[in-house]
Image (cartoon, rainbow over all chains, first blue to last red; front, side, top):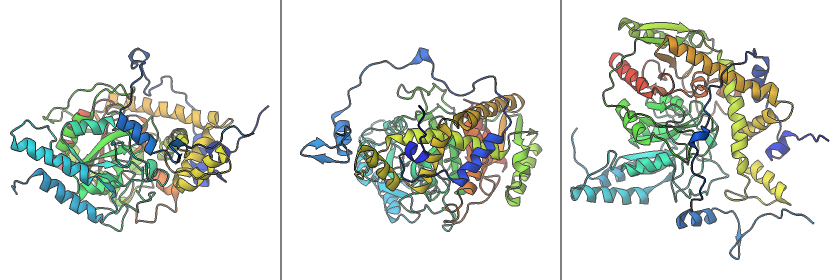
Length: 86
Length: 451
């Protein structure tokens, strides 16, 4: 079953519609010649050089600022919208 | 002029200038931090202690970099009250070298713009003519350097956001090779082209600041180890190329075209071979860049939903809260780019647009590789025209996108490119092959002598 997701839903922006100016940019791509490049020239991360998979504890200051940035707090709890609706 | 002043006096003098905020360059002042650090520098000097290379030098930071405990707004309404919980690697390296942060600088919101008008802090005014835009997105940073409010500033360049404002305000601005400087702590716009870079009043300052910020960082897996660029900037460049179609384009102003061609003649007169190169048309470069940048920013900014940080406007349920918050708190330009990004990433369009743009990017990179087998340096104007008046760009987004015609290609190629305030009214771009940032500075040094 396919469900069509419109750009306003995909973007979580109410009433969002594609822009004419931006569509003109995309039209250029659609009409461009398609000569596939044989090599990927872009940066890739080497799997031999990954950082250590260890937990790094944040400082107390960092934790405090993260809590300070939280948009809503009540009685010492961080408030989020209800996710499961009954 | 030779005059001895204390670090406190130097920093206080700059802060007093910034407080007037005549050009809308200031999002927040870091007065307390700066004066505290300046006091320590004066004490170190008084005690005869060893001081760092940048000890006591006041600098500015585009308001997209984390500096622990300071507001980092990205010039957006959504993050108007957001405080950095940690410090970006590049900024930390400057602090470790003794530099003193003065100001978080105005810019286009999330880097979305080429004029620094897309901001909640008021349009940045050009340093040379305040009726004109400051350029963008690192407009506040370029203007602060041009007006001597900061000794150097750290901008961010995704598609030209350091090089274009540097050109518009007649200062130096470098986009290093992608990966030379860690992006950790830079708010992501388009991660595959985002670069950290310095804006200064001299090539020597670019070299010093670049050397300090460069290096591998485990927190950004795309970084690499680079050699220190030495003080001797003697240029060994033998062949220079330029893209013929950039100069023959209808979009370039006759003034910039004539100035650029006159510069080419001066270079030839010094015995350097100059080659005309064929390159992709500007509309392909701009469209490829914006397709990929919009796709990446749609993904990167999806985290901004009012749940964990930033502003939140409560709706009737979770999804409603997300969409009301984003609808109300993002600017029109940011929404346009997010929507564009989701368009090209959505089922049915990704093959036709996004994947094709990826493929075009590979072709562009391949062409650069071929070109650098023929020439050492590629020269280009920075912009096709002079800076627009404040208010003109916001009404015509397509014109704004197309004004990035000469900068975005080098971003897609991940190449090191420097704007110097010479050669045309909006400067010249000097580009070398990947990881050859030193050659860029060396050739810039040579051009400084002959232009």
